[in-house]
Amino acid sequence: MCGFIGLIRNEETELTEQSKDLVKQQNDIITNRGPDDEGFYFDSYISFAFRRLSIIDLEGGHQPLPYENDRYWIVYNGEIYNYVELRTDLINDGYEFATNSDTEVILAMYAKYGEEAFKYLRGMFAILIWDKEEELLVGARDEFGIKPLFYSRQEEGVYFSSEKKSIGLAMDQQTVDSESLQHYLSFQFVPEPKTMTEGVHKVEPGHSFKMKPGDEPVFKRYFHARFTPVQTEKKKLMKQIRDVMFDSVNVHMRSDVPVGSFLSGGIDSTIIVAMAKELNPNIKTFSVGFEREGYSEIDVAQESAEELGVENISYVISAEEYVKNLPKIMWHNDDPLADPACVPLYFVGREASKHVKVALSGEGADELFGGYNIYREPESLKVFDSIPGPAKELLQRVAKVIPEGVRGKSFLERGTTQLSERYIGNAKMFEEQEKKNLLKQYNEQSTYQNFTNPLYREVENAHPVNQMQYVDIHTWLRGDILLKADRMTMAHSLELRVPFLDQEVFRVASSIPTDYKIANGTTKSILREAMETVVPPHVLNRKKLGFPVPIKHWLRHELYDWAMVLIRNSQTSHLLDKTVIEKMLTAHREGKNDYSRKIWTVLMFMLWHQIFVEGVYDITELQKEESQESKLIMN
Image 1 (cartoon, rainbow, N blue to C red):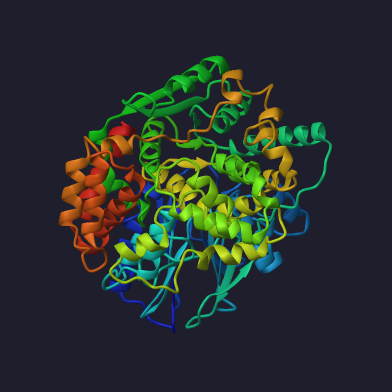
Image 2: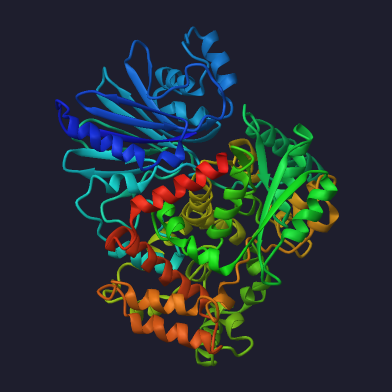
């Protein structure tokens, strides 16, 4: 597990010490991703820098790593869980190895298969490989986007990095991408491949690329996360789910350092812990919650831990420390993210890092097995399927004139609106008209449907629930869930592993018939049934809460003054009409409406802008503070 920097220059160049120093600075800024080791490789075209977090004690695992008499050089971030099996096959085919590392296995696989090699890798990864003989740079990102990979063309060439802030050091200034801001206000994150910084992009999940010096990267999709339901006998399918999940948890626990697990009050993390406990009876679990009643699952998590016979370590977060840590959290996120749950994830990562170097977590179960409550919406709206088109249009007009807050308005609006127009993912913040009022420069041609319509076209004949899952996997999962999972744990040099997001698990999950997912008045129905003998009964059919955060209450009380000061001090008046958000905050405080999520979306952009554009916060001081915390944890 690590972080890396890569630069492919436009033309053959004799490197200066100044150029090397910049790469070293870029590498230093991501020390949290790999505090145990660093390495460099320079030639006339390539600069590679690497930081390592040592998880598996493999001889010769130092990167950048060469192969075939220094023809190939690699930097890579991640873990390949099937590298032992791949290595055995390669040896049988006559390939030789100088190390026992998964890194060298990737190089050997590339030497054998070229770009097709990435299809065989079971794990999480972002990879750069330089072929000196062909003068060709090749890269790839894992199927779901567990590990990040940024890139940007600058004057001297194309930079790649595990974190956007490293690329920022090579830029004269960071400019807000206006299109990304417009989309962020819809999704609460910037949908990939764009970022909030103009000219910086992400390699998309399931894609590889190749490029020559001076050229642009040419991308190729090697994995497509499609749902292809197959009618299967239910008991047989339940056994397949149990077997594949146990196998995934097993390979995700490969490590030479202690492995722990996050534990909430929900079924996903409880499944992981229950299975991990079979492999390590002494596994430690970690939970966080809030002081406010109704916003903590610690008691449920502790009950689960007691029934499973594992240790649970919990921490209660106050409003004061929540807001105090926001600048550091935003700095780690690289881009604005308005999901309030990233903060408790930061704290649970901090607590876990005091005891372990690797933690398991339940991300991905909802997207693969149909776990979000909104996935039941198509079932509840079936009554509208038999209504003729003209009648639907009339009902839609009626719904528009019904005052806000009147019962039935939302039901009529949703029932008379096509799925592709009403559903853009698990979160939807501002409507287009609201963005038009808020933004100083609104582009009529750049709506959220620019991202979602192509996805709906790819699955236009699928069941509505599968369509929603497909949209979430290609937007919400990579843009929100996995972004915060990676950044909030790597902030504490903690490796997070997500056994649900495994190629073999997806193979089984993608074949599940839709009626098995949303049966019995619940979500993830077949997963719950399959795990009846695995998880405690009190968790089995518990309603999904996620990481509940009392933002709604705090913005009316504890955080109101902080929010108003941030709005008024923010140098974003050229981008946003700040009076709109001030009025929303005042109305929210007075209890006229719950605007908390929309307000929070704007506040997080303003905080990001202060850090990365205005320079209000001293980045060096943020790094020092993180470093001091890490030393305290290690001691």
